[in-house]
Image (tube, rainbow, N blue to C red; front, top):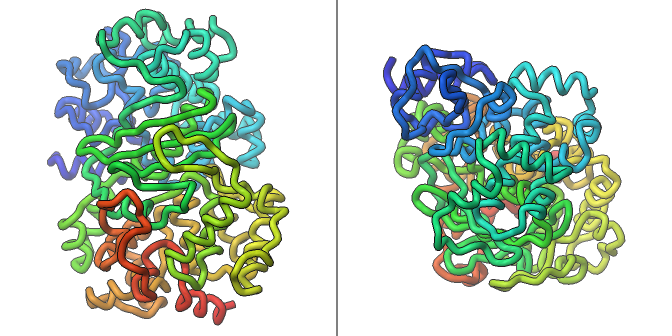
Length: 539
């Protein structure tokens, strides 16, 4: 089988069944193909070690290989992590951010620490299913239940803290989410075949330990990755006090379960350099998960680009800059509020409105290395806000008030484990929400890879230049061939425009640049007058 055919087999086969294609997995391991890291794990029966497919050691004999769909399943079967390839640090499976079913929603919530904080009952309550149903489906697809999956994540967090900080082991144990030091010691020995002290001793001498409250790490991704629109979008729409572009890095504050944090993310050729400042180490795994999600780092660009390239109109765009990601967000409710604030105005004005709201209602933070000052206000904080103080039309004030009520009351879930179609239905029922706003939130906040903005002016301008249909209905029919990757097609179409979101900033202050104008502001992820008028007509 050719290399390209092998790729198609592993990326477009039945969800959850990659590890069952024994011959294809063997070929991936023998070729040390890093594209399949995170899709499956190779366990060696003779050594009782499990590895990622790209492990640099000599591949084992075929008869000694077996494959698992998750690191947790390999650990549960009695295999320990390879010390060379560190399989626990591979990119996550792209399936969990591509799908909207129960297993994918559960995996996103487990990565966000729900099991560690609220246990399996809390996970079940968030998903609306029984604990038995969740256990059965996770075991069937991943070979491990929610407790084992959360345990594997705790082990990875513990290793990061052990190897990159000078934190006492007792503090590492509780920061990683373990209930006791004994459980921490036993788990680390079982997963890594080393004690916590031995793990720390393996770190090269002279490596500087992280400063108090800080951690520097590398976030892996599947190649290729084009960072221009990804970081350009985040920087061009940055809310003052909450986000900034400084010294070649996108920085923003994070509202986390146990406190606040600040993330600095810088694109490098083979990884994203990440520096985290946290007020509580227990939030480490959640902070990493949100950074990865925000930058869409677990995406499978080969599968996306292969399908989009079948359209002769998109193929040149993909070939020019392959591996575009969807710029997502760290906080779904925050983005929904910002989308409403930005309706019918330019990007610069939207940033101003949001900045004023942040200064008035956001929780203050201390930034040790930049100009960040606040967390974005929570829905609960905004529930007591008087919309009359905002310089916007009354109809938009009503829209904002209705959105905040839904979010604060728990009737609208825009977090990582949300049901995408249910969230769309709730948004559509709110006053002032039309197709563009709903699909924008679905694409960037919910993470739906197939969200599509057929009424978007930037998309329609690109369609016109490419001789694609330009009416929303006709463009939607044409875009059916792009499913399930229409959100990525949107990025390629947006990239044809001349707008700051398409380039990496060269100045620290993203607000310093060309003024927004109505013909390009649509590509910033904030509605404008044209689209809002269309939505008003629909409603």
